[in-house]
Length: 267
Figure (cartoon, rainbow, N blue to C red):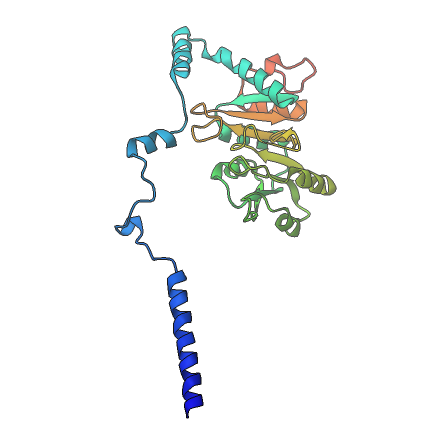
């Protein structure tokens, strides 16, 4: 059967050639560095440490800190920081706090909702975003995050809206703003307060509007791992005077006497 033999030879030769081509096109398998293979990062360890160090500071920062220590007038810098932050954000009211957690605590006190009120919070965040609200009897409702942005998933939130929902807390993840235009429209439609956790997003903006200024209130953190670190510290941003005065009175017993005379929180 010469014809059949020839056909078999042809198919066999073609299969061998195809197998050989696939084998040659397959990338060589490399041993991972952790298993003894070549290192992917060859930068010296001391250089790696220098690159990854955070926060960055130099001689100027050291000099200013020493000057403050020597002058014993460090508290005088707080109003200057508040003014600069107010001007930078174009915000009506700001208040420096000892850290981001205290800014959140003061914000939750300031909104003065009845105990049992539900507040939508992201499922992916630090505990400080949520724990302070429990001091005032608020109930956190965990909202899933968008897997592409790690930010507040408004679609998920809409499915878990109840008659007890009073506010929502979008958290801007690692400098990436949430969809604040859509979140603000959703909140307005349902009569909800927007409280921004912008602890990780100093300097970020959406449509030219800085994060922290979209909602009724917002907070920043200056903790050492944040974008704008001062080792520790926080800032509250408030849309109206009442929120500002309530938040300030909660954390600063000495300041209410400086409020306008018609303030109900003035001592």
